[in-house]
Image (cartoon, rainbow, N blue to C red; front, side, top):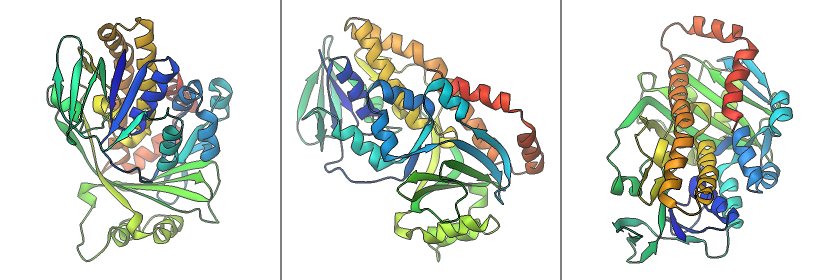
Length: 377
């Protein structure tokens, strides 16, 4: 039995590793003709680190990134509203969360693939299906036949568009910027991730190792005024002028050309992730807002549990896909919903004082219960 994975991002590469571990042949077909070091940073939660450990990749990721021993939400002046230490999490689950440059994670996943397993310059054009196997036709004129297909090609998945009902994108009505800069000498703690909440604006500060800092800025569309005379960098400096000076330093030290901008979208949970010999994973199946930092984590979980389902069903691919969906969907749909709710809470237009008061007084036990749900796989 052989499979084709559409999409060479984190979801697709993790899926290839998971299939390799159970000796199922699967090649990855990626649209990009040349691999480039793109993206900013990301945090791999304890749940993702447990899966990467099962795939024999965790230690390499830890060495290339930075373990996070504390997560803190603050007000706009970096006064703590809620602090969560991760020592008990490490004792219980074996890992801290790890912050890493996305390009480094991608390279680790690529380097550990089998020779010839990743195919570049293959954009899916259409899929020809029959009862036993299917043929993928690519824009470069090439065609490939396989027993099963995995859609790991992101929120705008071509494979999903070709075989499933259309999804309606939901706008979070928020804009997000990301960047990497030199870690400021006065950063409070090398193993602490900080998210600073203000008036419909928030700013994240996450050390990723090698004296580098990953940052993100999120602004509600009602608070963002596009100024044609200013670059995004200058406009962000203006937008966060009332935040702590450390945030000004971070923005000013970042190369303007390296700042990435995205509008935040997701889509409502879809009824099915699989159809015959086709299965969706990651953002193709369940795009979520970045508010819980679980997008890549859930894609990695998907990859592992999909391979387990296939091998458990003795290569009965349709039943394996149905079982995978049954095991994963309730958990992931809950995370999609919670992530959207957190984004709304962080960007309330009125009642910010009450929100901050409640954050300060939320018992640690409640926060830990929420994290236990995320980290238990």
